[in-house]
Image: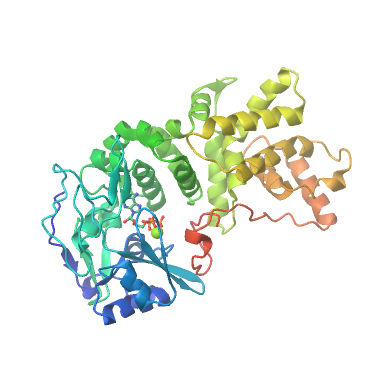
Length: 453
Ligand code: ATP
Ligand code: MG
């Protein structure tokens, strides 16, 4: 792909995005910026999704107005962000993110030329700019440099994520061939894939997430760079990787994402213990449980139900953890302690890679230890069981086992009836669901492909 600073402009008559498709708040934001003399574009995933006929998760705006100016123009504005200062406009049921055009500043061999210079209100920085910080491994840690609209497009991750909708004339602006890739169903990095993945290894996960979710192909050079750079995923911070893991597996196409991750070598660096176990067989059978469970999660999400992070992680790691717990029981540990030990060891090993929050770990332990109790019916004091914190999730876990393979449907039916007769809701709790940006994103209608937030 040839990068150029002369964009292709697709006039309103040649694309399907109409103003009626935008959220009223996004439209209001764009108009106010425009009416005050600023460039105002809708950018990123929402333009991609609108062009594909999908409902955008959220609306992001890019402008040449600097953060201080945005704050003056909007009373509902809060400036946020350490790495880059962004404006969040708080509406009743939606946050619109407004960011000033920013540059992707690199060393001299960088494919992104900086000749375009500054325009509008925002000034550009230089590669020695103190606002930019790069680690020894080349990972960009801070990137707080304003730029031109062209630079703003070029610093984005994939061509299909770099399209803009201009409120000035309702056209689409394409600096990087994003329209063609969108038409052809291709995920392609902007610029050299190896360098873009070195700067930010999380982009590799984003590539597989978008490919799986949109049913797109990852372009050859981009895919080769994924395979080559996969081990460097561990350079990203563990909390960010945790957030990304939730997006990957709660996207509604978690199973497809999982298969792509394993093929690209992206699963092993995140979950090395589990990956090693997956590579073995148990009693001559490959471990296909994760894939099956993720299909179940996908079905649930596509029917509009929620899957909380503890339930998701239990479904992903349960079989492995049950085996570990069985090993500990074989060494004489009682069942509860064996499961506690297996979960604690697993979370401990994961902590430097994927930071699973403590409360989520507690949930995983609760769901899995309850499985032992659920297997005994009625057992001692069954009435106390539905009151246990993780009972609804534990029952959902059991339901997944029954709908997949090997679960005892009789036991599930017994507990469901018992809970019903004791007037206890067996609907899933929403505890620990991942939050959208600051948890107050606008929700429109019933979402498909939503994470469990
Ligand atoms: P989603 O539907 O998951 O929200 P999205 O494309 O909107 O997909 P966001 O994480 O909301 O993704 O980011 C918004 C936009 O910011 C992206 O479309 C992309 O242009 C840019 N972006 C996000 N993350 C990165 C990154 N790591 N590197 C470069 N650009 C990024
Ligand atoms: Mg988005």
